[in-house]
Amino acid sequence: MTEAYLILRDFGNRVAEVHLSEVNAASKHEPISYGATLAYQQVASMIPETVPVILESIVSAEFIDDEIEAAHEALAIGGPRPRVRKRRSTAAPKPLHT
Image 1 (cartoon, rainbow, N blue to C red):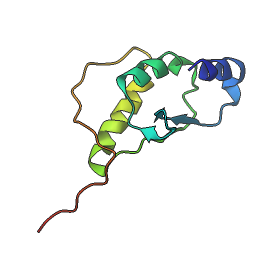
Image 2: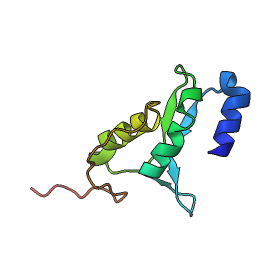
Image 3: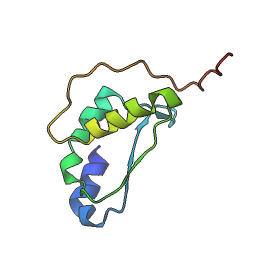
């Protein structure tokens, strides 16, 4: 998050969009973790409110709303709210059986 801080400090007024994500050791996008939420909150106040945020998490359809909520919390300036979240999976959703 040091690079994000430096970019926002020096060029915040020129930022056109923010890509919000968590990336694992293999450089693959994952759901936003609590640790990532805390890290993003350290720079959230520096992101202009008019800048669009692109959420890059890879989650199954049933967890999209949870991930959007996690993104809102990551950009919350006042700190995280306690919450209970469903377990998320990056696996493709199973087909419905009829």
